View 1: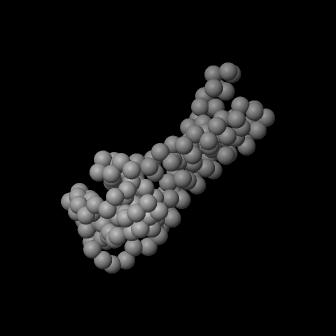
View 2: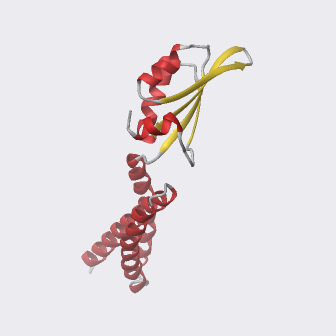
View 3: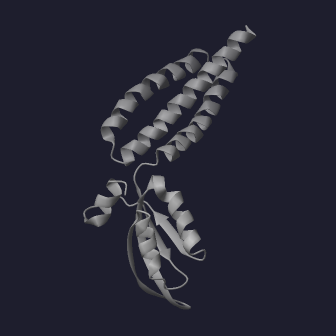
Length: 177
């Protein structure tokens, strides 16, 4: 009997990890505009959900099943976000303010394949250069490393743009250059 309980807990735990991972990925795909892939994924997700919930509800008198369901849900959130990080869908816009005005910095970043717009800026302590850099999320960490390598004192703010339309950036970034 104990063997069956352990197997049931393992099944419920696994089902919920898979379900919540699918749920997390589906939500992100929906937000990124991949609605047809998200819709397909939701069909699989709901089947997994119904099976897992059914197992718990059929055995509601066994608290370990409910605990396994809850723990699986939490682990599923972590697994889903890790998968999304690896997928790295979309683009990132990075605002950079350099410590000193450096005309070579935009050129060096462009040579690495990033879309860069730069202009002269004035900070509290003098001349600065402000840059807007567009890149795919897959290249985000490499961009940060490159900026820190070129200007260790650079001030960096990043955000995800909701809409990108036209210009050199979109053409170059979509081609992966």
